[in-house]
Amino acid sequence: MDLILKNALIPQGDRKVKTNILVDDGKIVGFTSALNGLSADRVIDMKENLVVPGCIDPHTHFMDPGFTHRETFTTGTRSAAAGGVTTHIDMPCCSKPSVRDAESFHKKLAPLKDQAYIDFAFWGGMTGEDVREGLLDNIQPQIDEGVVAFKVYMTPSVPTFPKVSDAEMLEIFSHIAPTGMPIGVHAENYDICTFYSEKLKKEGRLDGPAWAEARMALAEKAAIQLIISFAEATGARVHVVHMSTKEGVELVRAAKKRGVKVTAETCPHYLMLNAEDSMSERGTFAKIAPPLREKEDNIVHWQALADGTIDFVGTDHAPYEIPTEKDAPDSTIWNSFPGIPGVETMVPILVSEGLNKGRLSLSRFVEVTSRNAAIHFGIYPKKGAMEIGSDADFTVIDLEREYTIDEQKTESMAKYNPLHGLKLKGKPIQTIVRGRVVYDEDNGGIMGEAGYGQYVKRQSIQSLERVIKYETFEEGAKEAEAKPRMEKALKRDMITN
Image 1 (cartoon, rainbow, N blue to C red):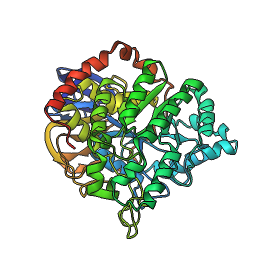
Image 2: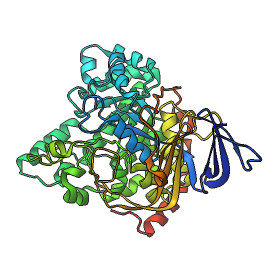
Image 3: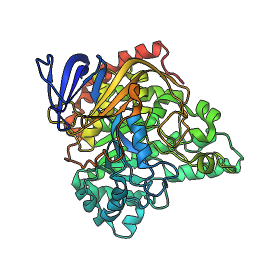
Image 4: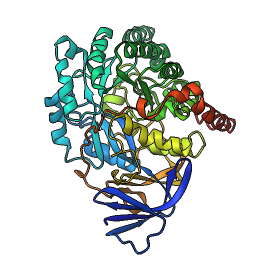
């Protein structure tokens, strides 16, 4: 046997159970309450820390190849490992070339496969240009290469990944629907965002919150309404990425109740920050798209994450170079690049502000950090599970360890973070990928090496709709379970804006 993790507390529903985890050849091969003479090449004492299935970040932009002045696959995956993430799923747009066919897929994969510290999967992509040029036949070749989902943008991303018009998005939905693959959509109404950005610019607004005012909540609401309508018309599996508004939560909840194939994610910054405070204080360093919202949106998103309306959390990790892109001499809130890092702080925030403060039960914490994303993207139970035969991916958490986010002390190249200075309790202290420790906070930090991480292909077309029965929404079961927990948290004034 290769490895024994002894004295581990693992989740069994909402209980923590002490056990010893047996690992061989990178896989989980057993659990035992007593070792009874069992031996292994390595034995690591977990010291009764919480050991959960390896956490997954399903939404990263590691900027490689093509934009390595911002981040490299090496620094991005080191940052993920330091944050307790064992697998990340990289977006198709922020690389040269962007991934839109099998050829561009291989051009992205080839230079990256020897750089990763953790395992990784890829999103595929479709754009308005692909529709106009009759290139929708490029969908299936990307599926054949193992991409886990497709991404479309309703607002511009980068020049190599054009946005879709409404009709172009409908056409893409119609072509992908028969494959059963999920389609992630950046949900902001382009005309609303553009018109009001220009309007506020002409009025001379240069304050940080002007960015959020221009890209108003209505822009996301209108976009999500359209996405849901198109999903109903085509039968496509749609996924709202980085959802930021309470209006979006209401729309997704109602659509799930009537059986629409819709899922949603949110990000730690939409749980913790609001535009008025953060953008006034940090300006361009808190500029993202969709923008930060209001304190009420934070509260509603925690509730939705607890009751199952929001399925999981991703970071939208999208770092930019400070002197040329975030804070250049001519930077304003309008022309600076919208994006923040986050892969290193996602799990600590969900541990401290979710699990430890009672907003998330233990079972729900496991769902939103690993299990649900693994199911949704077709890599379960290889990933996101603590079962015999699953990859031996573990995030080891010290629930008592106190931690203050310091933007300068990160593995990412981007030394800025609007969550800088946030004090947390509970932190990942070890990250184990396929039985190998790649991060150990108490023994020097990064322990792995570039190239250990492997590309993970989609294994199935299994969907959350079939695994997690949304009839519970009709019965009110999850909402009823989450409501008293959330009310208790709010009474203790735990929204830390």
